[in-house]
Length: 322
Image (cartoon, helix red, strand yellow):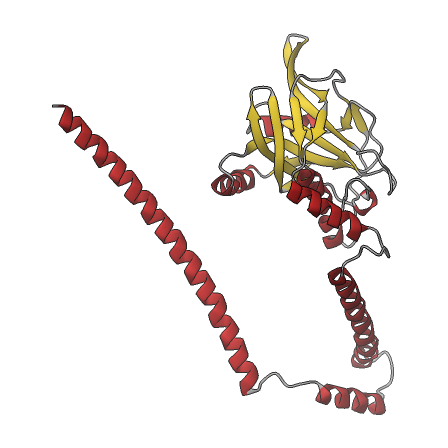
């Protein structure tokens, strides 16, 4: 995961794409960005790479924050789903609308300010990836004058520079046709006390073998090693059994008896105690879901009541005037 100020962009890899020129003049917005956004971008790329079993993939997302005149504060972000159609990236706009509406209910002050992406190779100042202009047009069709945050993940670990650029949207008339351009804009990091603590913890965990690693990190590392070793040993038992079943090797009855004995040692899961615990967990899960539904219904009823009271209060005031 990305962890300022010690950068670990090697944990994120994306599709190798050439870069394209963008407008290099500095924009006029006063942009503040929180470290949470940078951590989210890096975490997004790391998780997607892990799910793809190390295969490089690009990540996209939407920026959330507050804008007052020329002052912009980027506070949070959420991931964006997309698919490749005829070699170009197509963003799922339905997913964007649903996700933005969900965030609006939780963070009423935040509004979509633009989008983010990462870069697999070194990107010079004022340059973006090929196809970013088209992606920017897709975002601009939904959100007016979006910003673009590009995180360069090609820098070596340990670099002290923040490999990030922020671009503004600009519309120019070129050859009597409106053309989108991206103008590089200056930005400042804005942190709060909670963010400083979180970023410091992330930077400690990102340093492998350091004394700053927490007990939870060590426990999870050892647990992952144990599960990996168990998986390898089970695979070693499974391979000869499958070969015997296919007839590739002769049947070894001694080995089969040993495997049967090993299977008999495994704890049975059809006991009454196991059924009782499973039923209890199922009841707890259904109860939580039921409580969530009740809470949502109560909230809807409260909103209807407030609107009803407001409407009749206005009518009573109008009657009082006459």
